Image 1 (cartoon, rainbow, N blue to C red):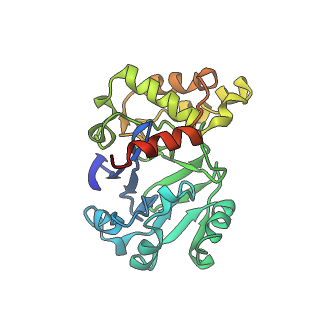
Image 2 (image 1 turned 90 degrees about the vertical axis):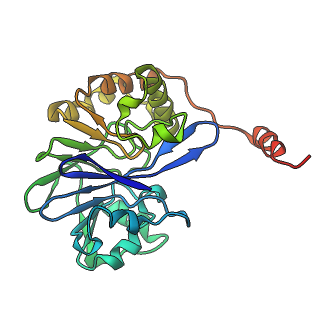
Image 3 (image 1 turned 90 degrees about the horizontal axis):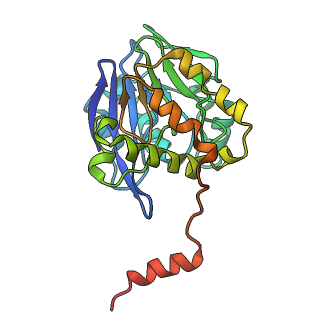
Amino acid sequence: MHSYRARQDVSVLSDHLEVPGLGFLAVNAFVIHAAQPVVVDTGLGLPDRDFLTCLAEVIDPADVAWIWLTHPDRDHTGGLFALLDAAPQARVVTTFLGAGIMSTEHPLPMNRIHLVNPGQALDAGDRRLTGFRPPLFDNPATVGILDTHTGVCLSSDCFGAPLPTPALASATDAAAVSPAELQAAQLLWATVDSPWVHTIDPAKYAASFTPLRDFGPSAILSTHLPPVTGDSTALFTTLLGAPQAAPFTGPDQAALEAMLHQFQPA
């Protein structure tokens, strides 16, 4: 993991994961340096990761006031309980459903939960962070963030893309990826992560972009893509085409056995 500033008020805690057959997927967490500091997601839970050490590069974990889980998938919650121990005053921002999903593995202390639904806002002292439902998501508890103070959108899994190299997955700007390559990768990820997009009403799907268009983000920070700064029109155009993209079909058992056979010693 490594850290860098994507904006004056937002740090990225950058990690990535190889997804066989797809490429390398960024797995980012973020720190919003508000008057009441907000950690957004807590990375992977793999034994060779140390989320707290990376977090300490940009903020003393004890100073964290809020831990906003955009949703409770394991690539977003890996460092959660270590951070709760290190930040005794911090509260977890999630939804009722998100807290319920978490409780099936490791119950959250109820006195440390703060529920925010899409359309509601969190007061972080010097700014209000508004929750919104991203156009694409893989978990029904997903709530992204619109930071009106900086104009930054934190979009959770939406706009993600598997990239061909670790260097691209851990880049500090998505501009490092060619436009054509980025478009193809984002459409692939849309069909992998949100397969329901092929069944949605096109008009309702297009309307789901309205909150983002109206917000006019200065940057889009996705969990699964390097930061995108400036004009977001190309991103919206790409994802609007997701319902027409080819559906993703993963490897079957025969393909898995063929892959495993390649790793067997001669």
